[in-house]
Length: 328
Image 1 (cartoon, rainbow, N blue to C red):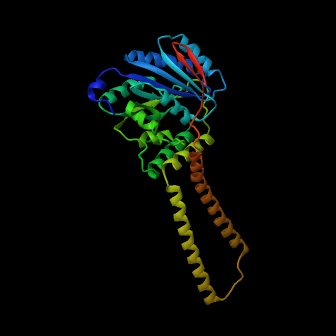
Image 2 (cartoon, rainbow, N blue to C red; image 1 turned 45 degrees about the horizontal axis):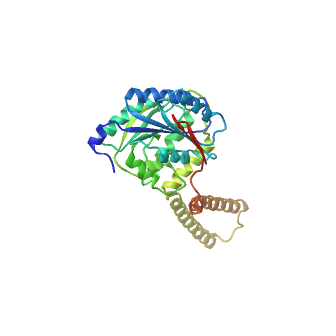
Image 3 (cartoon, helix red, strand yellow; image 1 turned 120 degrees about the horizontal axis):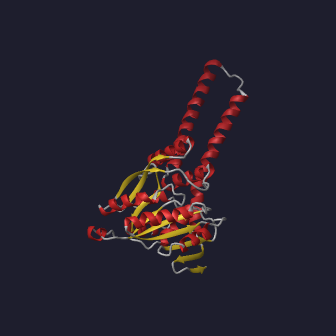
């Protein structure tokens, strides 16, 4: 149940959830900036950092930085391997104890200073305050163009309105987090799930900073697969497109067949061309293979769901300031 106005007037506990992978260069600055920003706001907070199978010293660096700041309540969850950002984010949401929860990236492109404005909108009665990027500094024109196209495509294909130019950076009331954690699916496109659960949502705008330290773990192949996951998670349109394509091709074939019969009756029989025959066969073969690929994507998602495996496995959990570590 969402908090009422009186409850929102009090200072809530805020959980900052940060999934990371090989971010040893960014983590000290991230923890320092979160500490400074949230302390300045005057709000109680905890940090939930989720290591998604890092191969560098990210976890050791995070522990060392947190030992320097014993006033911070923090949990570091180390997954048993790289399960993907969506799974790591879900692990962080499950571990968060706050009245409000803010997921953000570890690369400091999502500035913690925006959280104060999010809290102000939350106190107005909104359950979700999502951050919309006015500009994407440090990104190539290709990246900006493809991101623009993806969000507009999702807006047209999905029945769920997914806000454009919005990542995971947002503030969510506890009731929203609880609703998200009830969703059983394992192929999780979190941006879509954030929108699907509904509740009262509003936007806050900010300028996204360029990455200051380290290297991004994303490449265009990963982004392409991420886009495929998003489309197949929230739309049946790709399947419907191939139904319409099949109908259109059948009508064209029928029309062409009728023309061939008419031409034969009027002008006699001529020798059919090998090139045109091969073109038609290869074209239709390509159409069938693409259609089978689309169908395979949906069947693959069903296969992943029915196996019933856990979304992630935890290798170790470390808490500060008590510095207890639990290996699983």
